[in-house]
Image 1 (cartoon, rainbow, N blue to C red):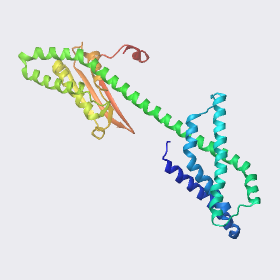
Image 2: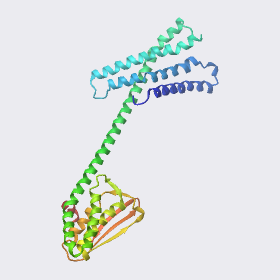
Image 3: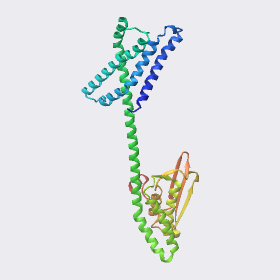
Image 4: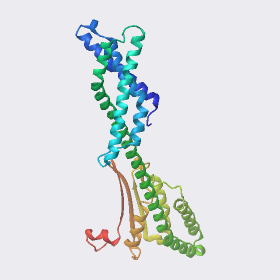
Length: 320
């Protein structure tokens, strides 16, 4: 069962006490407490609800055995209804024995013909009430089961989304590595003889980048400062390649440096700024990276003074 059995019994008994006490307060407010019969107005509802708590596993068993819905076949509905009739009738009969037994034992009630006749005449009405209570329990289990399935689907969806983000992150790493590494290695090779200190600095920056790129435990969301550090390593290498033709400006709001951003979100933007902005130009290039707060949002901007594009804004998204 989805809840502990002892809790079912406790809840059944508590509900019985509440219902029995309700009748007592009605008599009390009417100033007629003397007419309140504990065996009829308190013991009967208490035994009724407590017995449902005891029979909860049986109801749950038949719910799992005959789970019905609008699309269920006729024979499944028939079995579920027959099961509810059997349990409700059993409950109605047993509840009278549990209710009458203690009072008869202490002499408050006597097993007389009139008393038995009253019980027999009460069984049909009581049976209908038990049927209603049975199906209430049945629907509670159905609702609980539906909620658990819905929750499982939500968890599965979150896991799938997380796996998708991880796959995208891996694809971005693979995309970054080939052409950038070749360009960087060529730069190191050309600087190793004439400017060995610059070559060593690039090797150090490249090592820092590769640690981030090849880190399998890299989260899909990282603090902004960590993303900025990665981009700085990348741009430091590019500054050495372009020497005096490239300047990087950072305009960063320190109050949001711990805000989470998607990993590698800035690198493709600054790479495109270099590649399409002024990699083939002899003019001085300036790339500006901004991070600032705008109400409840973090805004990241990468701008450059490059050649731009002749495409209309509506066409840009179709060309990479």
